View 1 (cartoon, rainbow, N blue to C red):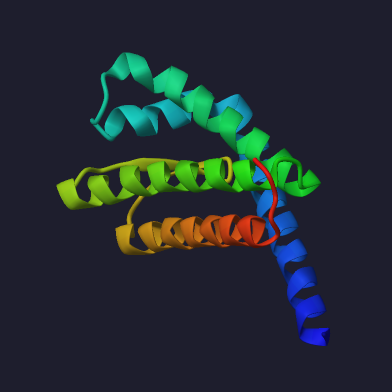
View 2 (cartoon, helix red, strand yellow):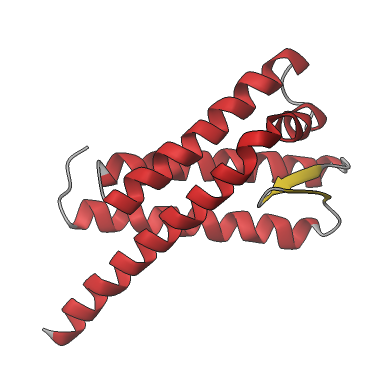
Length: 145
C-alpha cells in the first residue's frame, strides 16, 4: 500500500516537473521563433518556407502540452502529443548527426552550436522516454483522451 502511494506521488511530481520544464522552455522560445526556424531550415529536411510555421507550431505545442501536464487536463492526450513532439525533435537531431550537418539549437532560450551530438541526442531520447512514461501512467490511470 505504501509503495503504491509513493509511486503515485512520484509520478505526480514527475508529471508536474516535466510540465514545468516544457513551460519554461516554451516561454523562453516565444521571443526567439527565428532561432528555432533557423534550426529547422539548417536541418535541410523541409523547404525553408515551412520553418517559421513549424517553429511556431512546435513552440505552441510545448506550451499547450506543458499546461495540460501541470493541470493534469487531458493527461493522456497531452502526454501523447508531448511524445510526438519529443520524437520529432529527436528525429531532427539524429538525422543532423547522421548527415554530418552543423546545426545550432535554441535550447532553454539560449542559441548554441551543437558540438556534442551524442549528448544532445541522448537528452532528446531521455525526454522522449519521460513522455512515454507519462503516456503509460495516463493509460494505467484510465484517463480519457
